[in-house]
Each structure stands twice: as C-alpha cells, then as structure tokens.
Image (cartoon, each protein chain N blue to C red):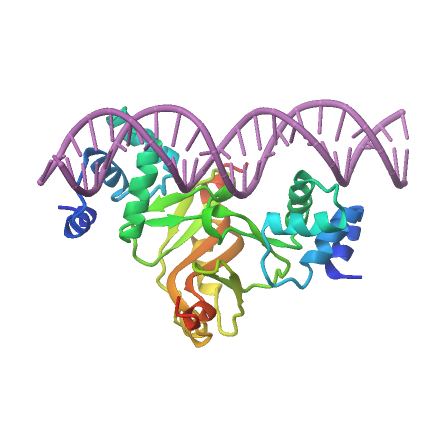
Length: 141
Length: 141
DNA sequence: TTGGGTGCAAAAAGTTTGCATGATG
DNA sequence: CATCATGCAAACTTTTTGCACCCAA
C-alpha cells in the first residue's frame, strides 16, 4: 500500500481506476508533470478519461496534501510534485524542466518567525529558482 | 527622473504616454497589481489603451529588469512588483493580496552555492509563502 | 435509490499573435 | 520614408463549470 493510497483510504475516498492511474503515475515521479502530461498518461491506460476528471483528481490530491501543485512553469501552467517533503525547485528557461533542489542546510525558521511575527498564518512555502540548467549549459545553446 | 524612466532612456526606449502611465502606476506601488488592474488604471488615463499594449509594455519592463513578474497568484495570473531588490512574498488565500516580506535574516547563499555546485546558472529567485494574512485572521473569516 | 465519479462540451480567464493604422524622427 | 508603438480582433492555452450518465453502496 503506497502512502498516497493509504491517505485516500483513510479519508474514505474511493480508489477508482482513473485515480489509481494518476496516483501511480505521480508516485516517485520526479519530472514534475503538467496536467497535460498526466492526462496523456492516464488516457493511454483509460482512453475515455476526460481532462475534467484529471483536474478534479488533482484538486482532490492537492486538498488532501498528498501532492503539491507548483506554479514555477511559464504562463503559470500547473505542474505537480508527489514529494511533500520540504524542498525547492529549479526551472530551466531553455528546456523547461523543473529540477528538485534538496536542502541539507536550509533554515526557514527565520522566515516563519518573521512572517508569524507579522500575524500571518503560514500554510506553505515554495522557493522557485530560475535560470539555465547544467544540461543546457553543456550543450552551449 | 525616476529610476525606471532613466533605465528606459539609457536603453533608447521612447517614453510614450502609455508607457509613462504604466511606469507611474507601478513605481512605489506595493500592491503587486495584476495585468488587469494595470490595464484598468492606464485606461482611465488613456481610454484607447489596449490590453495588448499593456502586455507589451510589461514584457518590455520585465526584460529590462526594472519590474519583476510574480506567479504567486492563483491560476498563474501574473502580477508585478516594481521593487527588484531581493525580498519575498506572502499570498493570502482569503483576500488574494500579495504582501512583501522583507528579509533581514534569510541567507540564500547556501541555496545559491548548492544550485551552483549542481552546475546550474541562477538568474532569479522567488520565495512564495502561502497562507492567511493577519487582516483576514482578525476578521475571523 | 442516492450519492459520488466520470465524460463531454461549453464557457471563462489569461495571454499571445498578426495586421493595419498612426505617430515619430 | 522607415521605424516603432499602438489598437483591435482573433486565436490559443489553461482551467473551470454545468449537466447528464453511470456505477456502486
């Protein structure tokens, strides 16, 4: 039983084929797929799947906190990360990939303290780093 | 002569009425206006202004680096910050406002070092903090 | 049968593009 | 005259919504 599935069961959410397909596509997926990429994948398994369902399932998973929606891509196109452990993201403007940046020495407590002292309630943090990835630099493009 | 205007002149960009209106609306503006809000404001001064022009001018200003485009709002709706000094942003999911978070105690050098050591070139950083702002907490909504 | 999940289509929202007009130097 | 900025409209992309159908408890 995967982590995501158990959370869904715990919340009384039925595991329909489409939901399972999306979950299985996302789990362990480090490519930060867009809605369209997820849709294409699910459709290859269940050709009748509609995009509205994909949006609906992704909203469900986001609301349950088992996936994170990122808005790091251009034009605000949503993409999804099944890892909910705090980490950051790098976006390459050449090849449009999103790369996980694991943090071994990051202390966000100062930020949380600062924002908390202003009276705001923090629910999520996303650090987006923009630039050109090593692959594209090597290609000298 | 404002900062933005001088940069434009330095780059040989003509200061048309629409551009001036947008610049003057943005300078010192801490509300992080959306394209639509900027458009509405310029239109009130120059009613013939078209949205395409607003997009064009905002792209120009972004490319020149005198304003920052943020994708912190829902559905990726762009909003703009005339302050290009490194700072962070808090988004309230209740009232949809974006609040500057000045950083006196955040050290991003570890992040930059880490990303650099992976071979990526960093061009920009945005830290987005999501939650509920103090105003909305007070209102107990 | 009753609610929830799905598929389909249309609509909505934000953004981009092409082209003609008009101002500028 | 040549260039660039603008206005307008249409196209395009992503996301949301409404409704009917279908399945399962």
